[in-house]
Length: 167
Image 1 (cartoon, rainbow, N blue to C red):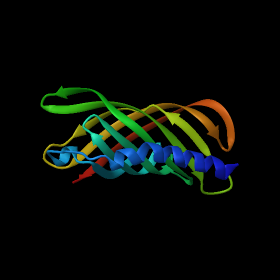
Image 2: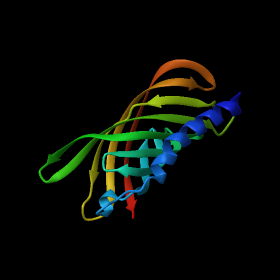
Image 3: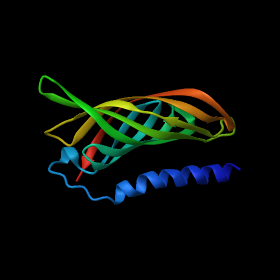
């Protein structure tokens, strides 16, 4: 049963990520390049990534430790849309919203498998002189599997991070 659940979750993630990675992207600067990699701090602390399909849509994700706890590996991925933008002085910020999943894989016998559906909301700042983005995201969600037990509960994640853009 456990292997089947992992396979279904992995297949769903591939269905989301593969079309975006395969799509061409025309960019005029590193601030809007297709790939980004960086550090994510918060509920899921570790490596953050982004694959941009266009200026308004991307796939975001994180791979790391769940709540700074070395007993569970956490992976989340979301389809992310720019829903608004605003400026403070001359600094431009994007407001984003998405839909995604979080998967927690136990690294020892005391924890079990976790699966949640997330709705991340965030604010992103793109530096214009250097290819760096910084972001803050809050992600309320519904927890479907907690410690190998199926049941519906509320979940919440928070993230602060930075990404380096690659051409």
